[in-house]
Image (cartoon, rainbow, N blue to C red; front, side, top):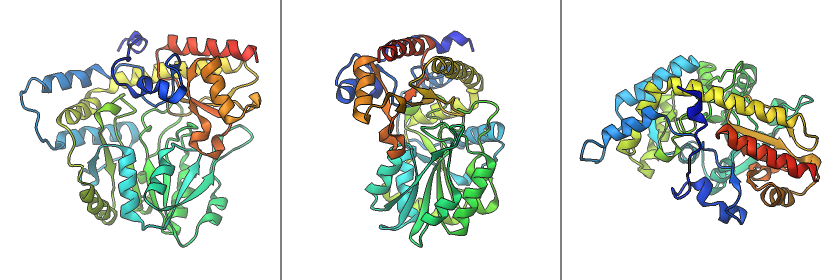
Length: 391
C-alpha cells in the first residue's frame, strides 16, 4: 500500500458527513477545519469498497444474515493481531457499540442499580447509564507525575456498594489514549469478580495501538474475568467503516450471553444490512496491508504533534499509546471551558471536541482527531501555533 494513499485530500462536503455537515450547528460557522468526531478523513480500504461493488452486481438486496465466513474472518484477525481465540458462538451482530452498551446495561442490571464510569471518557458512556435509569458512579482517572492517566483500585473499591452491578471500561481509552497494562486490567478484573460487578468493555479502538504497546482483550485475562465480561468490538474505527453500522458483541459466558440475547431480541435489530456484511468480511480478511500502512501514517502524525508541542508552552501533549485522538492539555491558557472552545473556533478556525464533554476531568482539555492527511494536520498546527504566539 503506497504511503501517499493516506495523504490524498478527499472532499467530504456534500456527503452528509457528520463531521462536516454539523459544523455550523456545533461551532456556529462552517469555516472551521473539523477535527472532532472520530472517523478518518482517509479513504476506506479499497478491498472493502471493491467487495461492496461486487455485491452490487447482484440485482437483489434483501434481508441477509451475517455469514459464518464473516465471523470467521474477525476471529482470525483477533487470533493473529491480539493472540485471542474467539469461539463462533460468543459472537453476535450489533449496529453499534453504543447500542450494545444499552442492551448490556438493561440485560445485566436493574433500574436504580449503580454503573461505574471512568472520567474522562467517551460521552455516550454517561448517556447510556442515565437514559436507562441507572445510577452513575464516576471514578476519576488521575494523571501521575509523568502525565500518565491511571485508575485507583483502592479508591474504586471504596466507591463500590451492594447496588454496584456494572463497570463500563474503555480499552484502549478514548480520549486519553491509554493502553491499559496487563497488571492494571488484572487488578480491575479481580476487583469486579470479587464484588460481582460485570464488565462491559468497549474495545473498538483495539487495532489502533502503537508499538511497543499491545492491546490485551479483557476477556483473555483469566477464566473468571472471561465469564464476567461483555466485550464490544468491530471494524468501524480500524478501517474507517462507521457508516456501515456494524460491530459485534463477544460474550464467552453462556449465562451472560443468554441474558444479553433475551434483551437483544426485545430490541429486534436483526442481522444488519447485506452491504455491511460483505464490507465487514473484506476488511478483516483482506485489510492487513492497509492497516499496517495506516498505523505508520498515524504514527507519523502523532509524532508531528509531539514535535509541535515541544515548541509550545501553553499546550501540553502526551503522545497516545493508542487511537488517533490527541488529548491536548490547554489549562495553561487559563481560559474557561466555553472560552477555550471559542478560542479554537474563532481564533484558530479549528473544530475540536471540548474536553468537558468527556466529563469533569476533561475541563481545560481539547480532543483533536489526527486521522487526516499530514498536510491537513500540519496546516492546523501552524494556524494554532500562530494564534498561540499572539496570546
